[in-house]
Length: 219
Image (cartoon, rainbow, N blue to C red; front, top):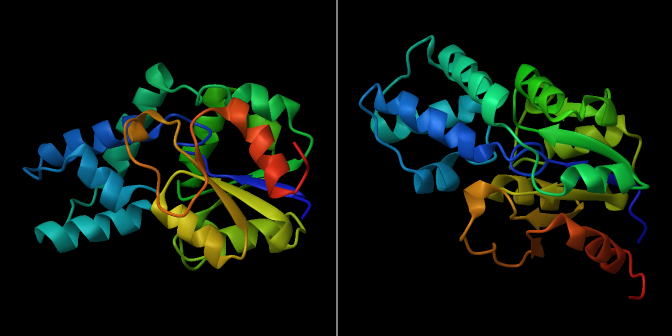
């Protein structure tokens, strides 16, 4: 079946940012005496909005984060982005060659995703076709965000393909009735096993062949 729209997650798919986010969050929580590891972040926080992450921390550690925690976290993270943020290897070239409509659907806040795409030089590639969890009632793993993105792009969900790195994102794409590929080329997933039941790839040069296979085009 023809793919008319490719929906990219941002962090960990377009931007190799999840490792930076994890490092900043781990350090900031340590300042409160709360210890989490990179494995904890991958398992519990990856692909989720900050309010969901804060609720998880509150439940696990019986601690309510200070009112200014999120603001401080985002400020420190944007400082790291200014010096250390990079695109995932090969994604810029892929986006330049793609002949399909594209958009971004992310759990990140609007200011964060805007800054991310600006730093990467990709803001003009996506234009206004950037959608965030703040625009829907329920974030990933609910299908709301992907269905909203498809509606805004005037595309049947059955003709959309989602590229995701996180378990909540994969679940959201399936729930939306969309096809999905798991991208595992971000630094935060180095050495991690591929999720069961998903086509996983680490190199954007492999993407065109996977797209052709999804559409049933002979090799």
